[in-house]
Image 1 (tube, one colour):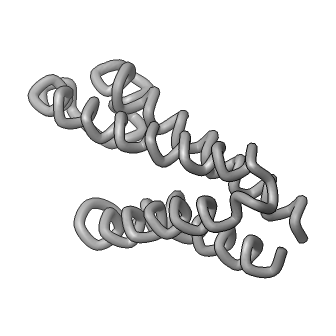
Image 2 (tube, helix red, strand yellow):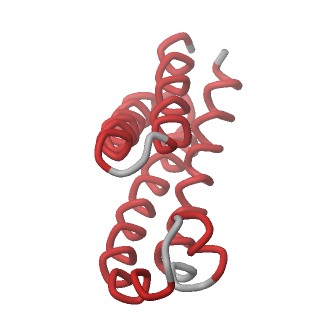
Image 3 (cartoon, rainbow, N blue to C red):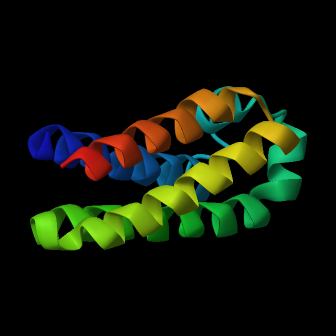
Length: 118
């Protein structure tokens, strides 16, 4: 189960790097507009906020990948950052888009279960 936990946590970390790129660098580009359902005008108005959000996603990714790098002794770090992702996903699903529930919260919950079983 430990290998599965490491893989899932690493994938969630990589997902958050992808979200960082979308929010910080592609927010006003076609990929960012599609991913977040933005109009070019709204994206231009909100690009600084999105970049800030992207930076936070980068910190989540760094914490998750740090926990994976530490191996089993990093389980407490994985749990902390997975809980952060879970809370962010639940909040995002409640306030922005239900899609966030399945993109962030559900994978974080799966990761938490796998880490707990490892």
